[in-house]
Length: 84
Image (tube, rainbow, N blue to C red):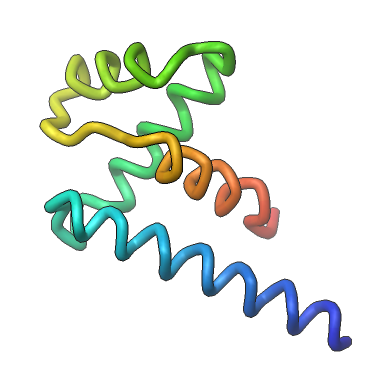
């Protein structure tokens, strides 16, 4: 039971860090979920894509925000640990 609580706590910490980073980039709360989903889908479809190409794809989707390496890693970590 303790391990499950530790995992939940770690997940909350990851999400909190991710949301803070997105806020610092200037994203509004109502945009964050969409941005996270777009980044995740881009990386999921083309996992070998470098960060510059990820950001180019985001701009093609209409985003005026760039993703940095740490933010992408946080998005991936949060999506990997989502319950099915």
